[in-house]
Length: 265
Image (tube, rainbow, N blue to C red; front, side, top):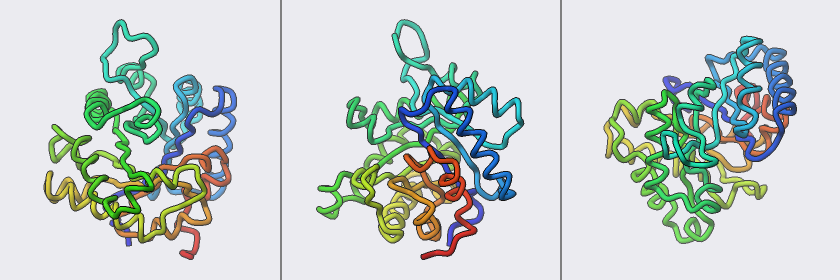
C-alpha cells in the first residue's frame, strides 16, 4: 500500500483548454463536488493547472471563496524576466499564488524541443520562486517495447534533478507519464506504473539518499479515469496522478480525487 507519510496529490492538467470564464465555472463545480462528498484535503491534495490566461481568475475564486483547492502553472520560463517576448517568469507565477509548476511535460519535450538540461533549469527557477516543480518524465512506445523504459526514465530524472539538495528533492514531485498512454485511451497497468515509479524512487535513493527517496512524491499520468484510478493508487510507490482530459470534468476529476472510496478492480 502507498506510504501514508506522503500525502497523495491529484493534479489536473487542463492543457490548452478553457477560457477564464470557463475556468471559474469548472473550479466552482469541482469545489461543490468535493464539498458535497466532504472531501478531506489533508488526505488527498487537489490541484488544478490552468492555462496562463486563466490563473488570475482561478486565484480570485480560490482566495475569495477560501477554497482548499490549490493551483499552479503548466510551464515556466528559464529566464527571470526582461526582453523575452511571450515568456512567463517564476516571479510572475509566484505573485499569482501558484503552488506548483509543471516542467518537462512530454508535449513540451516533443513540440518545443525541451531537453533535460532545460527542464532542470526550469525546475530550479520554480523552486527559487517558492513553488514546487512537478517534473515530468516518461518513455515512448518503442522504448517501452525494447525494455529500456526504466533506465530511460531514470536518466531523465537524473538530468532534471541535477544540482538539487537531498532536502529539496524530498519536497519535489515527479510525474511518470508513459507517452504511449497519454490521450490515447491506453493506460499502463498498475504493475507497469509501479515498476517505473519504484525505479524512480530507488534512483533517488541512490543519488540523493533515503530521506529524499522517502519524501519525494511520484505521480502516474496517462489516461487516468475514475474507473481505473483505485488500482493505480493501490501501488506502494504511486503517490497520486497527473490527470489530463478527465480533469476537465468536475464529476470525473472529483471521483479521481476520492479514489479511496472506490473498490480496487
